[in-house]
Image 1 (cartoon, rainbow, N blue to C red):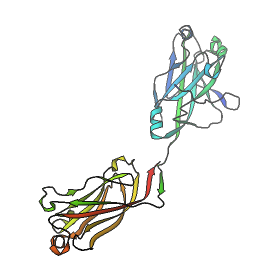
Image 2: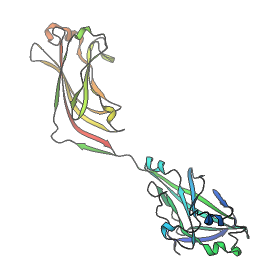
Image 3: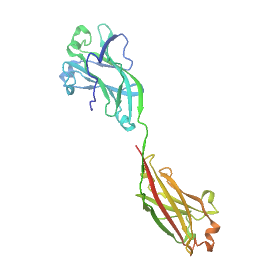
Image 4: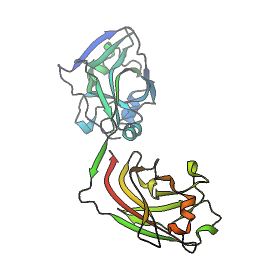
Amino acid sequence: MTTANSIYNNDDQVARSISEAAPRHYILKIMSFSFLAKTGIEKYESGEFDAGGYKWKLVLYPHGNKSRNVKEHLSLYLVFADVASLIRLDSEVHAVFRFFLLDQTKDNYLIVHDATGKDRRFHGSKHQWGFDQLIPIRTFNDVGNGYLLDDSCVFGAEVFVTKEMSSGKGECLSVIKDAISSKHVWKIENFSNSDSEYHESQQFSAANHKWTIQVFPKGRRRGSGTHISIYLDLVDSDTLKDGSKIFAEFTLRMKDQQQSRHIAGKVSHWFSESSKESGWEKFVSSAYFYHTSSGCLVKDMCMVEAEITVHAIANTL
Protein backbone atom coordinates (compact mmCIF):
# COMPACT_ATOMS: atom_id res chain seq x y z
CA MET A 1 0.00 0.00 0.00
CA THR A 2 1.32 3.44 -0.86
CA THR A 3 1.55 5.66 2.20
CA ALA A 4 0.42 9.19 1.52
CA ASN A 5 1.15 12.25 3.63
CA SER A 6 -0.26 12.01 7.14
CA ILE A 7 -1.33 14.53 9.73
CA TYR A 8 1.82 15.61 11.46
CA ASN A 9 1.75 15.44 15.21
CA ASN A 10 2.30 18.66 17.09
CA ASP A 11 0.44 20.58 19.77
CA ASP A 12 -1.31 22.76 17.20
CA GLN A 13 -2.75 19.91 15.16
CA VAL A 14 -3.62 17.08 17.55
CA ALA A 15 -6.41 17.29 20.10
CA ARG A 16 -7.31 14.71 22.73
CA SER A 17 -10.52 14.46 24.72
CA ILE A 18 -12.52 11.96 26.76
CA SER A 19 -15.97 10.60 25.88
CA GLU A 20 -18.23 7.90 27.26
CA ALA A 21 -19.88 7.38 23.85
CA ALA A 22 -18.61 4.48 21.78
CA PRO A 23 -17.41 5.08 18.21
CA ARG A 24 -20.28 5.00 15.73
CA HIS A 25 -18.63 3.47 12.71
CA TYR A 26 -16.02 0.89 13.61
CA ILE A 27 -14.45 -0.96 16.54
CA LEU A 28 -11.21 -2.92 16.30
CA LYS A 29 -10.62 -5.23 19.28
CA ILE A 30 -7.21 -6.91 19.52
CA MET A 31 -6.62 -9.88 21.80
CA SER A 32 -3.08 -10.92 22.76
CA PHE A 33 -1.66 -7.58 21.61
CA SER A 34 1.90 -8.52 22.62
CA PHE A 35 1.92 -11.34 20.07
CA LEU A 36 1.97 -8.75 17.28
CA ALA A 37 5.55 -7.98 18.25
CA LYS A 38 6.48 -11.61 18.78
CA THR A 39 5.18 -12.65 15.37
CA GLY A 40 6.83 -9.72 13.57
CA ILE A 41 3.59 -8.04 12.48
CA GLU A 42 4.64 -4.42 11.94
CA LYS A 43 1.34 -3.31 10.38
CA TYR A 44 -2.23 -4.50 10.73
CA GLU A 45 -4.99 -3.58 8.27
CA SER A 46 -8.55 -3.90 9.50
CA GLY A 47 -11.47 -5.12 7.44
CA GLU A 48 -13.49 -2.61 5.46
CA PHE A 49 -16.30 -0.64 7.06
CA ASP A 50 -18.94 1.77 5.74
CA ALA A 51 -19.18 5.44 6.65
CA GLY A 52 -20.68 8.30 4.68
CA GLY A 53 -21.47 6.02 1.75
CA TYR A 54 -17.87 4.89 1.27
CA LYS A 55 -15.66 2.03 2.44
CA TRP A 56 -12.70 2.62 4.74
CA LYS A 57 -10.02 0.68 6.60
CA LEU A 58 -7.85 1.29 9.65
CA VAL A 59 -4.13 0.66 9.48
CA LEU A 60 -2.36 0.23 12.81
CA TYR A 61 1.40 0.21 13.41
CA PRO A 62 1.66 -1.20 16.96
CA HIS A 63 5.35 -0.27 17.22
CA GLY A 64 5.25 2.93 15.20
CA ASN A 65 5.43 3.56 11.47
CA LYS A 66 9.09 2.92 10.74
CA SER A 67 8.76 4.22 7.16
CA ARG A 68 8.09 7.63 8.72
CA ASN A 69 10.77 7.18 11.36
CA VAL A 70 8.23 6.99 14.19
CA LYS A 71 9.61 5.69 17.46
CA GLU A 72 8.08 4.90 20.86
CA HIS A 73 4.53 5.63 19.64
CA LEU A 74 1.61 3.76 18.10
CA SER A 75 0.67 5.00 14.61
CA LEU A 76 -2.90 4.80 13.31
CA TYR A 77 -4.30 5.79 9.91
CA LEU A 78 -7.62 5.96 8.09
CA VAL A 79 -7.47 4.62 4.51
CA PHE A 80 -9.96 5.04 1.68
CA ALA A 81 -10.53 1.42 0.64
CA ASP A 82 -11.61 1.76 -2.99
CA VAL A 83 -8.73 3.84 -4.37
CA ALA A 84 -9.32 2.53 -7.90
CA SER A 85 -12.71 4.27 -8.03
CA LEU A 86 -11.18 7.61 -7.05
CA ILE A 87 -8.65 7.28 -9.86
CA ARG A 88 -11.18 6.02 -12.42
CA LEU A 89 -13.70 8.79 -11.69
CA ASP A 90 -11.02 11.42 -11.08
CA SER A 91 -12.81 12.37 -7.88
CA GLU A 92 -12.06 13.19 -4.28
CA VAL A 93 -13.81 12.77 -0.94
CA HIS A 94 -13.42 15.19 1.96
CA ALA A 95 -13.88 13.78 5.46
CA VAL A 96 -13.43 14.59 9.14
CA PHE A 97 -12.47 11.62 11.33
CA ARG A 98 -11.74 10.74 14.95
CA PHE A 99 -9.90 7.79 16.48
CA PHE A 100 -10.91 6.14 19.75
CA LEU A 101 -8.98 4.15 22.36
CA LEU A 102 -10.95 2.47 25.14
CA ASP A 103 -9.95 2.98 28.78
CA GLN A 104 -11.21 -0.38 30.02
CA THR A 105 -10.89 0.65 33.67
CA LYS A 106 -13.03 3.78 33.50
CA ASP A 107 -15.18 2.55 30.59
CA ASN A 108 -14.65 5.68 28.54
CA TYR A 109 -12.71 6.53 25.42
CA LEU A 110 -9.70 8.65 24.64
CA ILE A 111 -10.52 10.50 21.41
CA VAL A 112 -7.73 11.70 19.13
CA HIS A 113 -8.57 14.09 16.31
CA ASP A 114 -7.26 17.00 14.28
CA ALA A 115 -7.36 20.11 16.45
CA THR A 116 -7.95 22.42 13.49
CA GLY A 117 -11.21 20.70 12.55
CA LYS A 118 -10.17 20.68 8.90
CA ASP A 119 -11.54 18.05 6.61
CA ARG A 120 -9.02 15.90 4.77
CA ARG A 121 -8.97 15.27 1.03
CA PHE A 122 -8.87 11.62 -0.02
CA HIS A 123 -8.05 11.14 -3.72
CA GLY A 124 -6.15 8.88 -6.05
CA SER A 125 -2.66 9.91 -5.00
CA LYS A 126 -3.45 10.70 -1.35
CA HIS A 127 -5.82 8.17 0.13
CA GLN A 128 -4.45 7.83 3.69
CA TRP A 129 -4.58 10.22 6.64
CA GLY A 130 -3.93 9.69 10.32
CA PHE A 131 -1.59 10.18 13.25
CA ASP A 132 2.04 9.13 13.29
CA GLN A 133 2.11 9.50 17.07
CA LEU A 134 -1.30 8.39 18.25
CA ILE A 135 -0.14 7.63 21.78
CA PRO A 136 3.24 6.88 23.40
CA ILE A 137 3.84 3.13 23.72
CA ARG A 138 4.80 3.60 27.40
CA THR A 139 1.49 5.33 28.11
CA PHE A 140 -0.40 2.66 26.17
CA ASN A 141 1.29 -0.19 28.06
CA ASP A 142 0.76 1.37 31.50
CA VAL A 143 -1.93 -0.76 33.12
CA GLY A 144 -2.99 2.20 35.22
CA ASN A 145 -4.28 3.94 32.09
CA GLY A 146 -6.59 1.07 31.23
CA TYR A 147 -5.78 0.96 27.51
CA LEU A 148 -4.09 -2.46 27.56
CA LEU A 149 -5.58 -4.91 30.05
CA ASP A 150 -5.04 -8.65 30.00
CA ASP A 151 -3.10 -8.04 26.77
CA SER A 152 -6.24 -6.79 24.96
CA CYS A 153 -7.23 -3.37 23.67
CA VAL A 154 -10.00 -1.67 21.70
CA PHE A 155 -9.60 0.98 19.00
CA GLY A 156 -12.40 2.73 17.14
CA ALA A 157 -13.14 5.26 14.42
CA GLU A 158 -15.77 7.73 13.28
CA VAL A 159 -15.72 9.16 9.76
CA PHE A 160 -17.92 12.00 8.54
CA VAL A 161 -17.91 12.83 4.84
CA THR A 162 -18.18 16.58 4.37
CA LYS A 163 -17.83 16.97 0.62
CA GLU A 164 -17.60 14.93 -2.57
CA MET A 165 -16.05 16.31 -5.71
CA SER A 166 -15.53 15.05 -9.24
CA SER A 167 -13.48 16.78 -11.87
CA GLY A 168 -15.78 18.48 -14.35
CA LYS A 169 -15.77 17.48 -17.94
CA GLY A 170 -13.83 19.55 -20.41
CA GLU A 171 -12.72 19.68 -23.99
CA CYS A 172 -9.95 21.12 -26.08
CA LEU A 173 -10.93 22.69 -29.40
CA SER A 174 -8.18 22.80 -32.01
CA VAL A 175 -8.80 24.91 -35.10
CA ILE A 176 -6.79 23.84 -38.14
CA LYS A 177 -5.13 26.70 -39.93
CA ASP A 178 -4.78 26.43 -43.68
CA ALA A 179 -6.89 23.27 -43.75
CA ILE A 180 -6.39 21.16 -46.86
CA SER A 181 -9.29 19.80 -48.87
CA SER A 182 -9.39 16.18 -49.98
CA LYS A 183 -11.33 14.90 -53.00
CA HIS A 184 -12.56 11.46 -53.89
CA VAL A 185 -14.28 10.46 -57.13
CA TRP A 186 -16.48 7.40 -57.17
CA LYS A 187 -17.79 5.66 -60.28
CA ILE A 188 -21.00 3.69 -59.60
CA GLU A 189 -21.60 1.07 -62.29
CA ASN A 190 -24.79 -1.00 -62.69
CA PHE A 191 -26.58 1.69 -60.73
CA SER A 192 -30.08 0.33 -61.41
CA ASN A 193 -29.31 -3.37 -60.97
CA SER A 194 -28.41 -3.48 -57.31
CA ASP A 195 -30.51 -5.51 -54.87
CA SER A 196 -29.12 -3.50 -51.97
CA GLU A 197 -30.92 -0.53 -50.43
CA TYR A 198 -27.94 1.67 -51.15
CA HIS A 199 -24.60 1.84 -52.94
CA GLU A 200 -21.54 2.43 -50.75
CA SER A 201 -18.14 3.55 -51.96
CA GLN A 202 -14.86 2.06 -50.90
CA GLN A 203 -13.27 3.72 -47.91
CA PHE A 204 -11.07 6.72 -48.58
CA SER A 205 -8.95 8.98 -46.39
CA ALA A 206 -9.38 12.65 -45.57
CA ALA A 207 -7.72 14.45 -42.65
CA ASN A 208 -6.48 11.15 -41.19
CA HIS A 209 -9.96 9.67 -41.00
CA LYS A 210 -11.79 7.06 -43.07
CA TRP A 211 -14.96 7.97 -44.98
CA THR A 212 -17.48 6.47 -47.38
CA ILE A 213 -20.22 7.88 -49.61
CA GLN A 214 -23.65 6.29 -49.60
CA VAL A 215 -26.21 6.72 -52.39
CA PHE A 216 -29.81 5.49 -52.03
CA PRO A 217 -31.31 4.98 -55.55
CA LYS A 218 -34.86 4.75 -54.20
CA GLY A 219 -34.43 7.46 -51.64
CA ARG A 220 -34.39 7.38 -47.85
CA ARG A 221 -36.74 8.68 -45.19
CA ARG A 222 -38.56 11.75 -46.54
CA GLY A 223 -36.99 11.23 -49.94
CA SER A 224 -38.17 7.64 -50.24
CA GLY A 225 -39.75 6.93 -53.63
CA THR A 226 -39.32 10.45 -54.98
CA HIS A 227 -35.65 11.39 -54.70
CA ILE A 228 -32.10 10.12 -54.73
CA SER A 229 -30.58 10.38 -51.23
CA ILE A 230 -26.86 10.80 -50.60
CA TYR A 231 -24.68 10.89 -47.48
CA LEU A 232 -21.11 11.23 -46.28
CA ASP A 233 -20.28 8.72 -43.53
CA LEU A 234 -17.40 8.82 -41.05
CA VAL A 235 -16.39 5.16 -40.96
CA ASP A 236 -13.97 5.26 -38.02
CA SER A 237 -16.21 7.33 -35.75
CA ASP A 238 -15.73 4.72 -33.02
CA THR A 239 -12.11 5.85 -32.67
CA LEU A 240 -13.29 9.18 -31.32
CA LYS A 241 -13.32 9.35 -27.54
CA ASP A 242 -16.66 9.83 -25.87
CA GLY A 243 -17.62 13.43 -26.54
CA SER A 244 -14.88 14.10 -29.09
CA LYS A 245 -15.89 15.39 -32.51
CA ILE A 246 -14.52 16.82 -35.75
CA PHE A 247 -15.92 19.75 -37.69
CA ALA A 248 -15.89 19.21 -41.44
CA GLU A 249 -17.15 21.20 -44.40
CA PHE A 250 -17.95 18.97 -47.35
CA THR A 251 -19.45 19.03 -50.81
CA LEU A 252 -21.10 16.06 -52.55
CA ARG A 253 -21.52 16.28 -56.32
CA MET A 254 -23.31 14.17 -58.92
CA LYS A 255 -21.53 14.86 -62.14
CA ASP A 256 -23.26 15.63 -65.42
CA GLN A 257 -21.40 13.25 -67.71
CA GLN A 258 -22.65 15.00 -70.84
CA GLN A 259 -22.03 18.63 -69.98
CA SER A 260 -20.08 20.58 -67.37
CA ARG A 261 -23.08 21.01 -65.11
CA HIS A 262 -23.14 19.24 -61.78
CA ILE A 263 -25.66 18.78 -58.99
CA ALA A 264 -23.95 19.72 -55.74
CA GLY A 265 -24.72 20.17 -52.09
CA LYS A 266 -22.43 21.83 -49.55
CA VAL A 267 -22.80 21.70 -45.79
CA SER A 268 -20.83 21.71 -42.51
CA HIS A 269 -21.27 19.11 -39.79
CA TRP A 270 -19.83 18.07 -36.44
CA PHE A 271 -19.03 14.37 -36.90
CA SER A 272 -18.87 12.20 -33.78
CA GLU A 273 -19.52 8.66 -32.62
CA SER A 274 -23.21 9.50 -32.16
CA SER A 275 -23.51 11.59 -35.33
CA LYS A 276 -21.36 9.90 -37.92
CA GLU A 277 -23.19 10.81 -41.13
CA SER A 278 -24.58 13.86 -42.84
CA GLY A 279 -26.20 14.46 -46.19
CA TRP A 280 -29.47 14.97 -48.04
CA GLU A 281 -32.65 12.92 -48.06
CA LYS A 282 -33.80 14.82 -51.15
CA PHE A 283 -30.59 15.42 -53.04
CA VAL A 284 -32.10 15.25 -56.53
CA SER A 285 -35.53 14.19 -57.73
CA SER A 286 -35.76 10.74 -59.28
CA ALA A 287 -37.52 12.20 -62.32
CA TYR A 288 -34.62 14.54 -63.08
CA PHE A 289 -31.90 12.02 -62.21
CA TYR A 290 -33.22 9.33 -64.54
CA HIS A 291 -34.03 11.74 -67.41
CA THR A 292 -31.54 11.24 -70.24
CA SER A 293 -30.92 14.95 -70.63
CA SER A 294 -29.63 15.34 -67.04
CA GLY A 295 -26.42 13.43 -67.71
CA CYS A 296 -26.52 11.96 -64.17
CA LEU A 297 -26.94 8.38 -65.37
CA VAL A 298 -25.20 7.31 -68.57
CA LYS A 299 -25.12 3.63 -69.54
CA ASP A 300 -26.33 2.89 -66.02
CA MET A 301 -23.24 4.53 -64.58
CA CYS A 302 -23.18 7.47 -62.14
CA MET A 303 -20.22 9.66 -61.11
CA VAL A 304 -20.10 11.04 -57.55
CA GLU A 305 -17.45 13.26 -56.01
CA ALA A 306 -16.81 14.14 -52.36
CA GLU A 307 -14.70 17.11 -51.29
CA ILE A 308 -13.92 17.29 -47.56
CA THR A 309 -12.18 19.91 -45.46
CA VAL A 310 -11.72 19.34 -41.73
CA HIS A 311 -11.53 22.72 -39.96
CA ALA A 312 -11.53 21.80 -36.26
CA ILE A 313 -11.19 18.94 -33.81
CA ALA A 314 -12.65 18.92 -30.29
CA ASN A 315 -11.21 16.35 -27.90
CA THR A 316 -12.43 15.58 -24.39
CA LEU A 317 -10.10 16.29 -21.49
